Image (cartoon, rainbow, N blue to C red; front, side, top):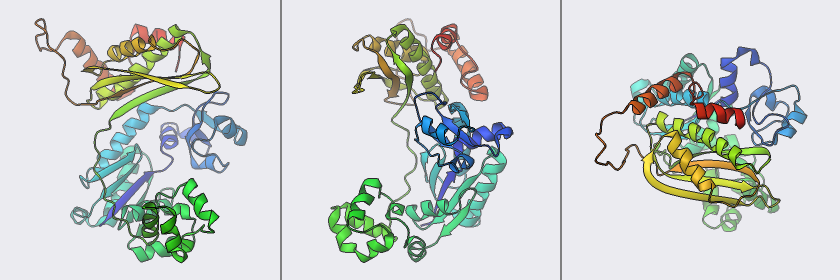
Length: 390
């Protein structure tokens, strides 16, 4: 097999720097702002010099780098850049597995020869990504998914590396931490360390011990350490659900305020649905109460398909009325049962023709796709933003 793994370099931060070159060479941290609850979602390489990493509490990131540039995420920009990146990848094979907005595997075993080989494909993807999207990526070529992933990490940022066979992989990782093996997380690594197994070399020296420690997972760890990886790239399939949550800086007991937050979340989800040409059947409300136990509750309602802001909002507001009225720390909406086909129940008054509101919605979507989802707002949404900005 010939597998290519692509990983964008500090994706969110890179998009912000691309759009504002004055941020270049400054530590940029994307996530919550200093003084807020929350974490750093990602950061650029300048910020990483200060030990900042994804999921670090924002107060700790600020303590380490108080002069950094802290920014909230601009999700519409990241989704648009991701769409452009995926379009480039799809040029070279129809066997693409998108791991996230900015990372994916390509199986070019049957198509690389059409473009001059896997190396040529990898370099062309790097060149086109820079020229067409204004971003850099690191690309790895391997004979398996694990080898391609390791190869892309080897020369970050803006790197290229190739691991052609199992012997090359073993020589590369033999003295590295067991965490380099796919599927070996912190808990598994800790259990291995208790047996004195901390490097890949130790796995080679203790094959039977590792196999016996973890049931079916044990032989898999040994096989992967040996460079044996039979996983196949699985083409992207439509996601089953999407959702957005908001964590408040102080617990909220004003349910009018909470309904305003739901309206803004519903607008964001509606944009994502319509931009992808999707409709949803099920709308779920999630809340986390503001007590010490932070107990969570969910309520769902399934009905006719929709992708409209008002439909999502009204259902979520209805569900909000069904929960216990106590201060909330978090509120969110998710939509599921996604489909490309609406199945609205027609009545004797429906004509099947495009309505005036449908035309307005279509025009709004075109503007939002071009300029961002916040470019057009209803009067209710403007009021909600004023009362409950999220």
